[in-house]
Length: 79
Image (cartoon, rainbow, N blue to C red; front, side, top):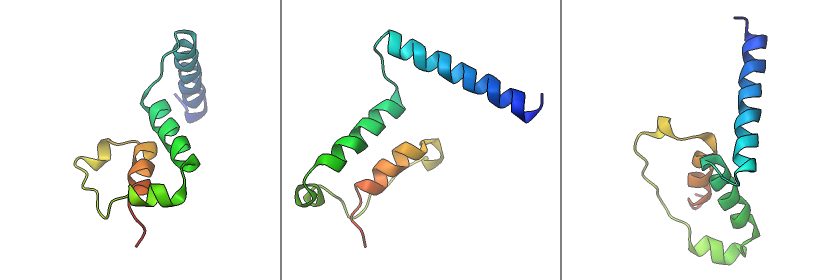
């Protein structure tokens, strides 16, 4: 199977999955992480800075999504 039809098939599967979630009013891990990141952006910067960490240790980093990694970076103080 060439990459283009394979990509189209994968996208159709994603759309069906997304439609099923919406029709049943469910959410997945990506929805959860995105919602957390959206809420963090609305929090007062000083309040959020006090909730940040100097270090976060993560095991099996290859098992996390990019959205989850963004969440880890968000909770680390800048150096």
